[in-house]
Image (cartoon, rainbow, N blue to C red):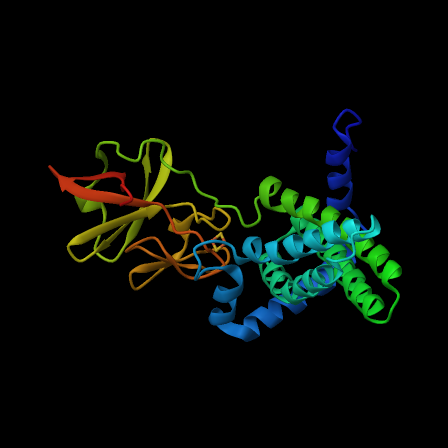
Length: 296
Ligand code: FES
């Protein structure tokens, strides 16, 4: 039951995110996307999630259609007010936006592929609206090229409205529902002193253990003489990495299989794109001590 006191935009988002109508579409589409990603292998997953970039790729690529189609909207408006010398620029920007749609859509579907419940449903609406916008812009280009310019401008205006609403939902997905956001508690004092967290003999060689440093989960890993430490919450969706599996000097996330390096915290395989927080370790008087690593 929706609370009538919450704002209209909140109610719209909640209504869409809990829509029963979108559920069958989400349920039919997601396995197809997951299969396609699995067929592409880790290289395709890493490329689309932005693992290679250290940042979600979708957030970067969406700027192409959004920016280009905003240029089209401005130049179309000028044209409607009689300034026609930028008409070619409007059409070129429209085509650039269309060219950017494939990358934005592919990276978005990849990020959406492991969502569930409300984010999954809202993501479906986001994708459908953007798909509608792309169709409207493609139609606009055809209309412009076939001499029906005013109709083409109207189609582009419709596309811009759809894209804007989709962007609003995209903001909710990334900021509100944290799809693509970094899921990890950063230590408050990155230059804090070392603190004892575990007896040295409680961490056997080749094993990992979760410890607590001022309320922040830290994952220790002993490899020969060295002890390495990264944040225990996976940056992708916050999975407890101590429940994952060790692979060489990496840990495999238990939820979505990201492979995270103990050496520098970087994801070697996605869907994670942000690196894990790093910690320095030392052993003093039989105790393992940890402090947040200072980034240089
Ligand atoms: S929580 Fe998704 S890969 Fe770790």
